[in-house]
Length: 459
Ligand SMILES: *Cc1c(COP(=O)(O)O)cnc(C)c1O
Image (tube, rainbow, N blue to C red; front, side):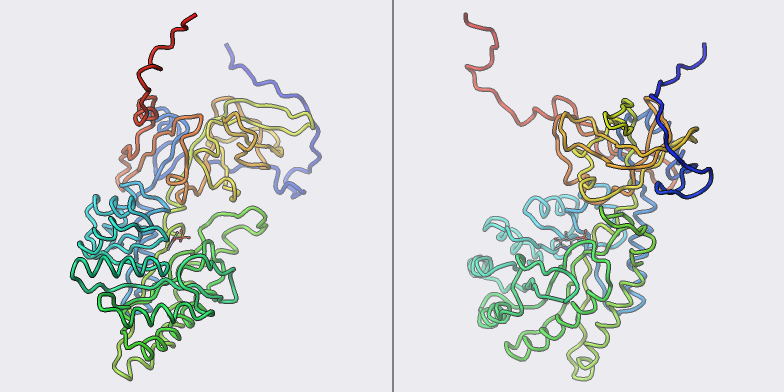
């Protein structure tokens, strides 16, 4: 018996073979059968669909590229992995093995880094919410606290006093570089004088020493000149604050924000043309830093350590999402659509990126503008509002990429179970690094009061 064909209502799409039209090249021949040497079909058969797949080699290669770009241009560089970008244990430990410290923004993330074996002195603790209990633990263990606001400064002062300790702290700054919209809600503002006021308070504190400066401009910052401006501003403040308060700044932390090879909605040029390389970012940053600190060498002050907290640019292209076609549908306006088994519940970044979407086998037929809907019974569940794809059968698979940043952390358990996440190592061995959820996982934290346990109707 021959294979059953999927019936498609015929439509007309004018195009010329081999030529570009408003849809781009309609003879789409691109497909991806394997990832890191492993057949996509085998992965789906063994681990199900949808499925997140990480490449350990790519993750390591990205970290090494970042280290190389900066260490060849500046003497003292520390790279700290931003946990919120992807805190799966296997991801964090791979990066820690490559030499990354941990950058955390909550008590939970601090506890996770410690439980993975990261020593406290290699943990940078950012974020606006740090309560007394966690501050006590961090002070006790010697973690590195980045102050966000004055209330935190006073609380930490109190904690340090009670512990009878002198604590080195870093101040988070915010300011306008002229390149990106200033994230003024985090840290102390420079232009208003707030940052200098806080530095003066630290200068007079018996328990806290200002030893570092931090700022994080934002995310997906496409212009390396923004970082050069950031470094110049921070170094200017460093010199000023040292003169005025007698502190000694040992590190300049420029945060994260390097763009990854993804396409923001509304960007028309492909990422290959607009996203700078690590070398381009490093060149701008290290040139500015070397220039701004040259005098310090002469005066015997020493140059500050450079700290990087890059998240998305390191992990994004190390992970893909495999998803399967559930159904083909023709919309009332004639547009073609497909329902797939992965939705915005697990691919949160679908809200702002046009991920690359590639079939996993060569497909016959004319590519057509297609809407990709996720499996949720929610109108917002649109994975791509417009993508050119040839006809596909139920059960055919698609690869979404890159998906390594902000999905395995921002995903939510909503309507569906979250699927398996696997990692392929350098010898093509596949390991489950986060098992698919089932009913017991989803209900584990619930309890039902006694009088509600029976659902038998009393009438
Ligand atoms: C989120 C965050 C990062 C990482 O940002 P990316 O855009 O993923 O590089 C680094 N530092 C801080 C303080 C952050 O909040």
